[in-house]
Length: 306
Image (cartoon, rainbow, N blue to C red; front, side, top):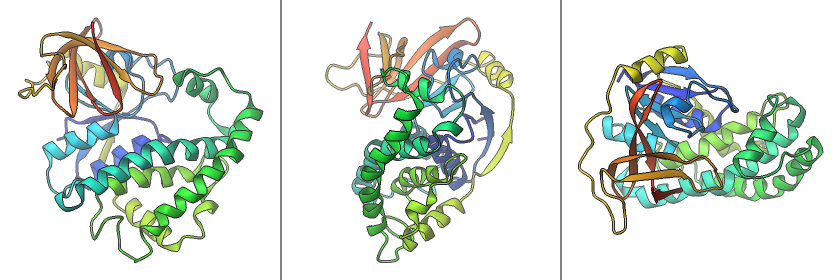
């Protein structure tokens, strides 16, 4: 497992989810610090245009999106499990809600409170990512007030799940629901201006937050981006597992392109090497790294035949 490389940056909440899952699995891994905004000259050659963080790398294989990273870590290290069978449906539903309904208003609130203190160009970069015009600082500040009204009731829902003093959201051990909700709560620490006061009325939530933080990040070693690119260049994509395409899916060997489904403009194109109900992998060639396989989750992503 020491071959694992995580492309991330410090204040990315989704990267924090990945770092914590690596710690939960007690894995050794190497980190490459990527810039939070474009250009990303040491990431795009690996992913073919996908620019979001984090990305997990093993040689010439890249896994995009923390949902798929979680599945890949589970496949490699089944215990301790992120997906206990007894609570799997509820856990997946909570994870989807936390990342698709709770995260965005929290991000807009925290970023708005810290409007003047975020990295240069971040507001403009995130607007482009969602197909929106660059916002003014005043608009970013107003978004904080507007989105706090969406944050407060949802934080109360999360706190209500813990009122019976269970240690984790669905029982005695953390699962994917906890990791997906925790990285949203983690983001309240903000940048320059701390926003954690929103959580103060909920002592059970704060205790759960501290238990999740105590899991840690495993055994991390930092390397430079050139080393990660060299590892991809010196490797070949791993032999794919047997595909199980669904009706209408492209078959292995067909040309396809994939992008996130939330207004992202950056398609990644390649030859399908693996596809099932949960994942699609494209093999592509780049002059800097040779052949690489880029793996995407199905849920939340669009694909098209080329």
